[in-house]
Length: 202
Image 1 (cartoon, rainbow, N blue to C red):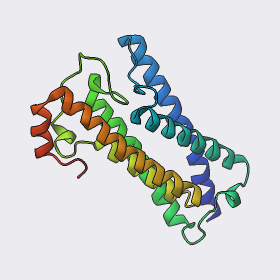
Image 2: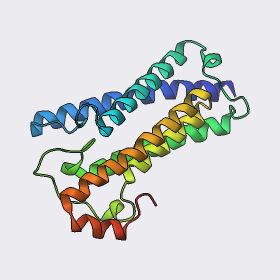
Image 3: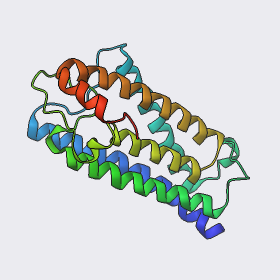
Image 4: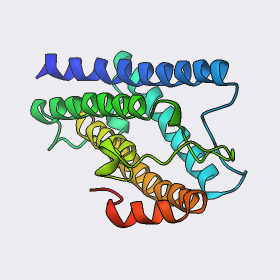
């Protein structure tokens, strides 16, 4: 148990650090090549603006806590659930995080030039993706992210990770509705036909 727990503890710190570096590197590279930001916060005070900031706060908390846990035992302050804190659950959480990472990268690569984070305010919006994984779910990227959030809860079953999971799911489901409203305005009947044919989630 000690070796598995130590593995997952180090994995979480390194995993979330690399996620942050990868996202920053990808965003900067796209900005230098395309000359516009692929990360969109929305108007100050709007629902998407709040969603982005809440998500960023929790992302920073998760990264900070996971890195600190490598060097110090702070689990007592996180409210760890002892009934779930054993190696099969921890390993399952780690595997779900890896599956989420692979899925998100695959989906963003599938979107290619159409990938955005948030609602793109520019008028020269790319085409509406309705095939491949987007032919089975209107929000496969968000599904992959929520899978990772659940994986984090299992890899660190605690009050802290449960709060992160609940907050993350609420923010993502609300953001999905906001993004679909924007797509409905931008693509009109094309999006309505797509909405009738493909479920929002499954």
